[in-house]
Image (tube, each protein chain N blue to C red):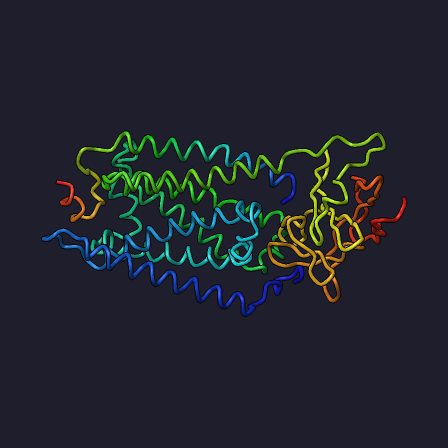
Length: 49
Length: 348
């Protein structure tokens, strides 16, 4: 890769890496006791009850 | 092996690779569905479509994670070079699997209402201000769209017409697609799958990909030793120059330089392949030509030109050997310029 691409590649991962972990952490910490998302499959909702 | 869109041809190796890849996909899908059914608690009504939905979703995630690990791993060990060479086929296959997953979701959850399924996808769950109830399908659709653009422009036709720089920049969008996919899984499946194994798998995938890219990215930005008084850069001792391989030198300005040894000859060329910017210094000399590790583009050591009938040219650099130490002049010659190699054992 050219130097410019290497730099933009690194900058992108310096941004995306922490962002991905922040999303995972927030998603896990905010998990509801019971599913509330209407889009979830019915059988899966029943599984957790 | 040329800078046009006929470059990467079907080879027996590629055919074998694709056969194994498609076999692996089938084994995973069948195995996943079989295990889902065999471990299903009594009384559950787990449908085949739901099982296939999960199987294709998890497979697309695992494959994209693997694909994004190939580049950095290939810089660490040669074992991953064959995957690098066939990465585009893996990418297109991953897109097709993700497309099947998305189609099943649209059919199953949005296909039976009077509302257009795509409209339904965006309006059925308006909880964009909620984390646990976020319409995570939209994130998956965003990732799928980016993967579609990647797959549609993956052929060398587009590389030749867009130019390697723009093509490469465009295809870096796959990293954004992966971040969207992580968010899609975190705000979707992780919200109802209570097993810590799912969280661990998601975090491990994201952590591995991010660590590999950050690690190799930081390593590639490292500068070489400071130039000598006359501006030349020290490469390595002759004894440390591996046969048919290169040392990569990174000057303070300009592109990296690949310094190759071929028998008793030392030559230096640009480290950037004309095809897709692949790191030539991580390749090797095959049939007397420097061969790019990404897609096999070749250049002659002595003048940086691709052998006829191909027409690609890269910059060459002057080298010298003093006291059994190899040096390179960081000032590039024009692409395709003849440059006599340094001879090991000769005085200069």
